[in-house]
Image 1 (tube, rainbow, N blue to C red):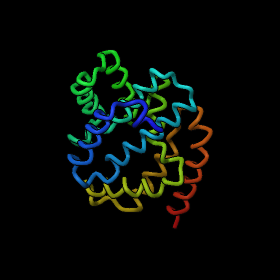
Image 2 (tube, rainbow, N blue to C red):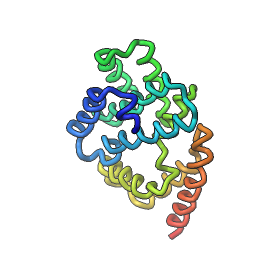
Image 3 (cartoon, rainbow, N blue to C red):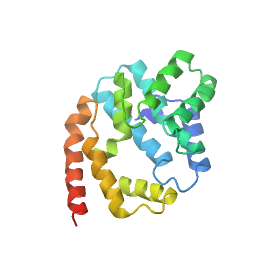
Image 4 (tube, rainbow, N blue to C red):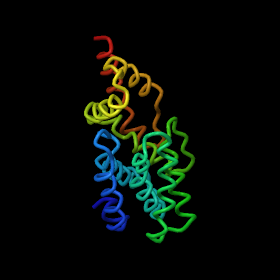
Length: 199
């Protein structure tokens, strides 16, 4: 069981994932339905480990589902766009203005540099970058490199490694779970990058 089956109505999940699968240009090799589904699962795990209240857990699921939907209209300011889409669509699924405001707060918490304010915002910020502290880092960062290189063909492999070294060096997780379980693996991934960068 995960957030897809326990916290969200199937119609809402289908609606968002269908849009991400069918309406996103194929050059979005990272920010897509696969990433969104991954973040949903990670959000469920971390919310349980962090003992997030059930009411917040439910809204976290909605925010995870919508956090990258703004890419449907382009990468620039996609968090703001995602909030606008959520505000337009969620009332039809019986979410209140107050609930939608909380969801938008979580979506905005994924904006870089991250500055989450609430517990739920800290969780979504962490799970959006969950992969940094896992053995999937090389695979997922490769997808992101391919996506960014499409929009900037001049982006070289060496420049990308330098960007990633800088990003991982300055990034920090916000939840106790991520600090304990993800940070050590992220540091190992950073060490690997530095070695590759010297090659």
